Image (tube, rainbow, N blue to C red; front, side):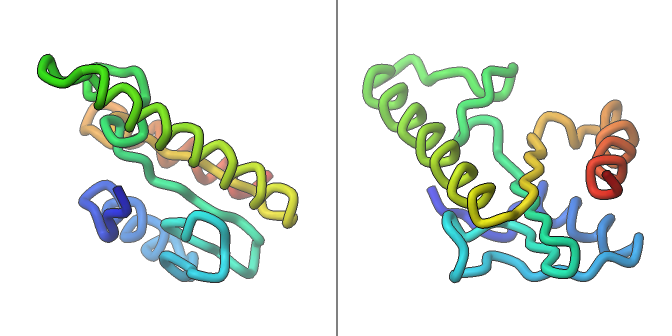
Amino acid sequence: MNSKNTKPEIIVRKKLFSKGYRYKIHDKKLPGRPDIVIPKLKIIINVHGCYWHYHGCEKSRLPKTRAEYWLTRLENNKKRDFFNKQKLIKLGWKVIDIWECTLNKSNIAKTFERLEHQIAV
């Protein structure tokens, strides 16, 4: 699944922009075409949907039908994410992952506080 401009991505991008960060999106030159690239700081932010990236939270439950197929597909997504992240790190990028479930109303302030800390470090 290579969905772009998802609702969680847009939430993160708007917040980053409002804080003065400038970024590129879906850079084809980088492994995995990261969601958000801040070239000036050499930071990549991947905004993962919990289901498609098989997070393990409430939002990532397997369907009851064709469960074996979906488990294989979602595990392959997870492996691809891992290998792309390793490639990016080897290229000198700092990679930050944000999960869809952390962008709900009860967690969003803490998520952005943590994100700003990770960017600053």
